Length: 102
Image 1 (tube, rainbow, N blue to C red):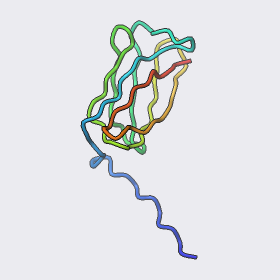
Image 2: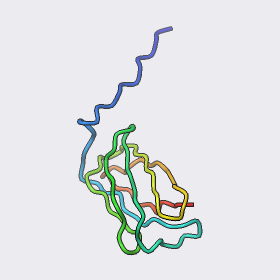
Image 3: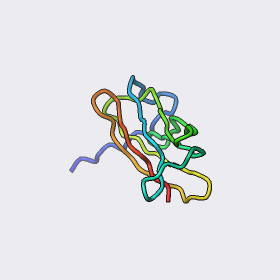
Image 4: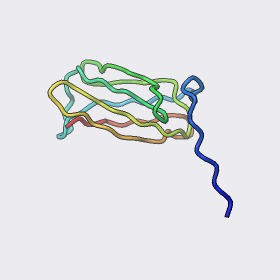
């Protein structure tokens, strides 16, 4: 059988961009906001796309996301264990989620 071609290594300087946004609010295990102080890092195939601090109610907005693209995030906050997750943006590049720290 033919050998599959290897997955290309992403070029972090040529990451996909678009008009979409990832927005939400960082919450604890019970769904409560953290009153600010959280940090969210967004990655595309290991390439850092964004590194943002949250607002007063732990809300965030990350613009410039590409449509139908898979992203991975890590969220941290003082006195909590980190949380992580992934998602695929919709046809416009948008995604809304409330990432959780533990």
